[in-house]
Amino acid sequence: MSGRDTLDQQLLQAHAREEAIPASPIGEPADRVDALQPLLQSRPAVLRSEPLPSLVIGELIAIADDGATPLVLYPGQPGTAALRARTVLDLHGAHIGAQVTLMFENGDAALPIVTGVLRPAAGWPLADRPDQVQLDSDGQRMLVSAKKELTLRCGKASITLTEAGKVLIQGSYVSSRSTGVNRIKGGSVQLN
Image (cartoon, rainbow, N blue to C red):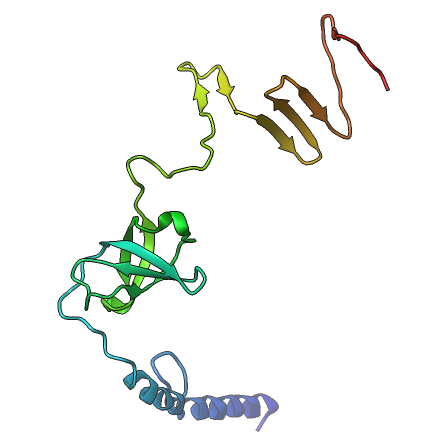
């Protein structure tokens, strides 16, 4: 028997040994699948009296556990007490009392997940409402307004406008160029 024949025989024997091991549908040994069966069977039953709609509108009543757990109410919920929910949003105090969109984990009506906050018609209340950004209709002009101060910042450079009329330009390099006259006017002009 040649060396080539011996190698072929060894490969055939190894392949036959692999086929003798029963595999699960996902390619794992059968004994590992059998070990998972008790865990899969002991999952809690889903509380489902009737199919839930794809999206439910509820109300955010409070946020418990130092802002970690939203409490919600929704029509048709099990019981009358607010339910603890999970959330995909960063909810805060301004959201309390707002309508929220809810989905349910595994279709379980007792396990709501807040997926969104419906925006009120008047918009969110702001402590100090900023002035609006105005764009003129042809898109060639933009006016940005602020009550106290407006700053444009990029890295170490900034331009600040104040309500007192000051214009502050700061940067590691400031260049002023003009194809025409470059004027500097003021009550006094100081260099260095």
